[in-house]
Length: 81
Image (cartoon, rainbow, N blue to C red):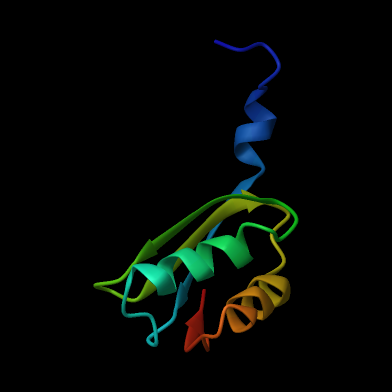
């Protein structure tokens, strides 16, 4: 186990899920992952093209910044939560 990772680091991680119905292909997935991955605090981005969900994991996540990044990728967020 890496001693630099304390349990508080793990507890500070958050997960947010966004419904993005316009995503249909691998290019959509790559665009969203690329833009959202640039947002401060984001450590992982998962895109599910079947359910049209984007799941973001990180610390001190800024919902507004993530929605803006998805918009920058060319997609509109239907719901965030």
